Structure formats: C-alpha cells, structure tokens
Image 1: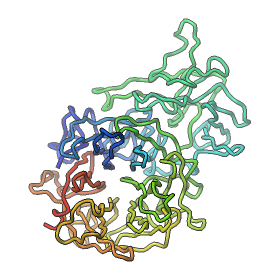
Image 2 (image 1 turned 45 degrees about the vertical axis):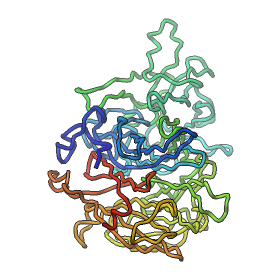
Image 3 (image 1 turned 90 degrees about the vertical axis):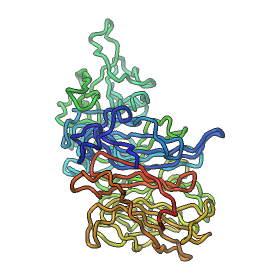
Image 4 (image 1 turned 120 degrees about the vertical axis):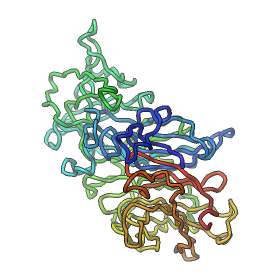
Length: 545
C-alpha cells in the first residue's frame, strides 16, 4: 500500500499517524475521489505512464477550495517519485479554514480516458461559489446558457438568483447587456497554465472602448490598480464571475477595482489568492468542463465548457460525472464508432452517458426515443464487451445486486434496467474489463473468454451496508453477454496500517482500477473516510489464492 494523496495535517485524519510528509504532498489538507489511468505512449520513444487523479483541497469536503491534483508513476506503479501537482484551480472568495467553509468556486469528480490520437481527455464537474449538491436550495436550475440567433452564450446575472437583468458573454469574451448592446466589460478567454488557469472567470472593464487589454493575452494573476499607474491606461479588474456570495450591487457605469489578496500559512491553511465577486455573476448551477493532455499528463490544456452541448432543463441544477474512468470504444460492429469516447454522467437519481466522435471536442447526449437517461441510477461506470455491447453499472441505494443497463449502439440508446449478481452497496464502484489474449490467465479462468473486474465495498457482514471491507470481484462474460461473478477476495491488509483509526479500521469507499503493463491490476482507492488515497496492485492469480 502506497499513500498517493494524503493530508499533511494530522488534525485532518482519523489517525494522526497517517499524516504525510510535505516533501511530496506540499500543503495538502484534504483529498477525495480517485481516478486511475494507464496512459499509453504518444511518441515512439515514450513509455506508458500511470496517472493518479484526485480532488485535493478542503478537508475532504465536496465543496470549498477543491482543485484537481495529479501524481504520475513511470514504472507501472512501483514507485511514485513525482510530488502532488495541482493541474486545475478556481478562484477563492475566502480560503477555507475548516470543513464547513464553502466560499470558493470548485472542481470535483474527474473521469478520464485516452483518445485514439493519444490525448488524455478529462471530464470534470465545475461549480461556482456554493456547496454544490450539499446545499441544493442555493443552486439554480438550467444550463447557465441561452441561445441567441442559433449561438449558445453563457448567461450572467446582476445578482444571484435574479434572471431579470440577463447579460451574455459573446465572441472574444465581450459582455452584452439584455438589450443586445456590447458593454465595455469582458472576460479574458486565454489563461496561463502556470497558475493552473485560476484566472478563468476574471472580469475586466476596458479602459479604451473595443480594445480589451487581455482579449488576446493572459490576464495577470494579480492585477494592479490602474489608478496607481502614471497613465492610468490599464483595464480595470472588477472581480470574478464564479463568485457570488454577498456580491456588491451592480453599477456598471462606475467600475470599481478589486484587489486580490494573498493568504498563506500560518494565517491561512491554504496559500492562495482571494478575490471578490464581479458586478455580474454566472448562474450558480453545475457545469461540465473538459481538459486534455497531449503528453501523458505532463501538461494540461485550458478547460473548455461543454455544458451547453449536453445539459438540458430536465437535469435541473445538476448533471455531473460518474467519477472514475470513461471508455474509448474499440469493439463496435459499426467501424465508425470505434474510437468513440463515452463518459458516464448522472442527474439526481438518473444515469446517462455522453459520447464524442472527435476525440472529445464536441459531445452528444444518449437519447433513447426521447429519453435522455439510460434507465439506470446515480453514479455509474461503463464497460465494453467483445461483442460491442456497452454495460452501465449503477450505484444502488442499499446493499443489493447492482443495477445495469445495456447499449447495443455505442452508447447512443439504452435498454431497460436489469440487475447483475454483483452485490454491493450505496457507493461508487470501479468496473473494468481485462484484455483478452494479451496475458495468460491463471487456473480458474478460461482462455479466450472475457472477464470483468470490480472494486467496491461489501460491508462487514451479510446485512451490513457500511462502506467497509473492500473487495475485488471477478466476473466471466457469457456468450449471451451476461456476467457470472465467479470469485471475490477481500482487500484487507495484514498487518492493517489503519488499525489505530478507531471505528474505521476496514473502511473502503471510492476506487479506480487499471490494467498495468505486466498484466497486473492497479487500484487507487479511499481506505479512510477523509483525506487519504492509497495505491496497491495485485495479479489475477492473487484473486484465487
């Protein structure tokens, strides 16, 4: 067992002895929601790279200063020498100091896959300042976009929850008023990867009409007050549209400069820059953003928003990812669908899927005779069988067989909900297929057959539905596409490194599986209820031992 993400603050862990060294973790306070991907070579001299992704930030809360963090292994998970890297960040209104602080925009729930062109594509939920699903009364329904003359534009409001004075962000980031008139305000469209794109949503007032200083350039991390400049010719920074709590009254005739504030330990748990809401704010709803890497995770692109392509009014305030991994299809009877990216998503209580046929730039929503949901529930994961069928595994509400639904056309339409005899409980599960014919099978498995692996909690007793006793389940795919679950083994470690985490000695929650170069299986998982994500690997033979 290797700690991949772990809090360096003993007060944030069930057992203080589990606190990690800042040498690798930096100032990491909290982490949750793992995603594991073996990135295949892009160039001839590349080697596969194992990439671990996690939410990092506010004390394992699903809100606050939550960013997307990454670590990479260059020897198939044997060692993890790279430190935690923050790859995506959003602005903080007030840096959180405890679990309940929520005054920041945030990312959550990454899901990844690798396109056939070699790009790693990551889909992630993005929220403006809020507690997300944990304070639904604060959220607003809808997509956050409107259609004008066939074009989709992001909506801004003069105050949170007030849709009367609607502004829109249009070409080059210029803001238009409700009468369609161009204002002197704009949102820069190009942001610096050096700062993890944290300036996205910053809003400026152009000192010279029609000439935004940062229309074609990165805005600064910390803008200077133009009134202090000798010629006072610089554009005025007025705050960030993804912040909204206690937003000042809108007076666009008189732009007011906002000074960003640097905070750091010991005064703050986090080192970051705080800023204030802009005069206009984005709709406070869930958004889906995509980032991509062309170099096995060494660098990541500026995120782009696909919400308007896939979210619909019936999703209300939420359409989010089924965290873990997505699919790149390769066994479709219709050859044009091979290479398609398929990502699991869900609205409250209803699962769906998104697909892209251009390596993740444009996206479509699954649609079964007008039904945009796949007859499955909640957070789901997807696998592809050799016959081309795609199976969705949902998250049940209690300890029971797992709900599934099947697509016969590459994720475009879905059949009725059924169940498979994978007994799990109310928790995300990871489900993957094992490659056929690439590695020899151990005794107990039949060569030429396809097998499915799942990691999930199973409870400490037959009737126990707690997030405990993580197991690996092995299923054998039958000729008719059904799965027979033939073996299961507990992941409990001896000696148990969590023995002194009283009450949480056998905890197991979210997880993510990946097949490694040598045929072993890597597992990234939550072995404690907060602020710790670990990695281990095992062979197929281990399951039968």
